[in-house]
Length: 450
Image (cartoon, rainbow, N blue to C red; front, side):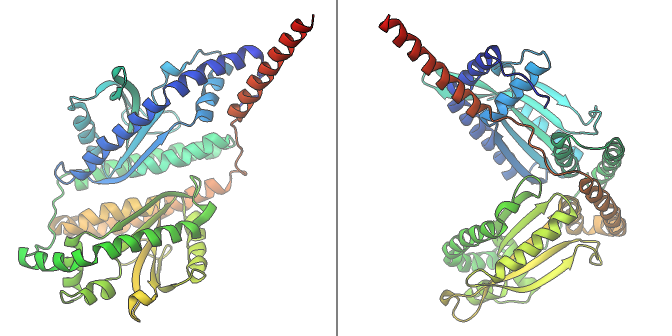
């Protein structure tokens, strides 16, 4: 951001806009909750709609970011106001394919409870930087003491590859130090990723799920076992999540870890895993012999960040009470036969509760490219016909993705240290109002003395 003189006129303007933000803050928070429910509902019925959801992200634009955006537009000579902004409450749904984006768009358009004001299709008309995404500007209903108010908000729809590019482009744009050569590389990369997206969309358009059928009797038997263990797994999940969060520490930021996900394996998947391992339907088999009932996935922006995170995790696990590394599987640089890349850590939890046997859980570390490939491949793998048709192609695609991964890492290495382009305007305005108040008190005191 260029330097700007924060004169009294500008400070008063910022104070006025801050008042609008503050007065409406409860409404925007409720609007964000509404967006969460919309996307959660779409995700819960994703299989029914033939959609694969990768990530859901939400954010409320912080007051300082809001004020900096106002200031940036003042600096450009533009008159942006609070009422002009539609992304104070914003959410993002990252899906598998281009077709998924437009299916979600239709689901949102068909809702009676929201008003879609505008659509910005940066997929059909990408920005000059190479940014691609579909933005939907809408109004969501919020109950207030004066009745229902419709609050402007935004939903962004992207494929995983578009999301990967957007995040890297965001870092470079806000650092403001990308060379012209690297900017051209990014633009070419965006075009390449777009071609991949079209290819993957065609490959998965008619995807079918041909998972192994499970008998209702077997499902009921395992459900009884798992119901007895569900409370324990909930407690262990929360415990492990907190331990991993502490280990990652300050490495967990938007420049390194982009997605941190966790899950307790669904009962159907537990049954399939038990069948695969030829296990019985007992508490001991489920608790001690299925090692990924609790799983975590950490998705990094590039390969360098992913490798640094793995080193931090390995050291942190060994130095955390009752945890140890049971096994690792490193497929960052050398893929599996299928083309899969990533790093898996099997973690053993040893405590009096485990009766002398460790309870294990799993941590997957991937880059966005690796995660994109894996999620696409999972769909192919579940469809015997698609696996036969596209299996070899996906192996080659893994190498293509890896080469692009290396290219991204090089571009990121060329960037200098991060520069914070934001001014702490909240603190600045607080000092300004305090000084103004003191000045008024002083002036009134002087008048009274006269």
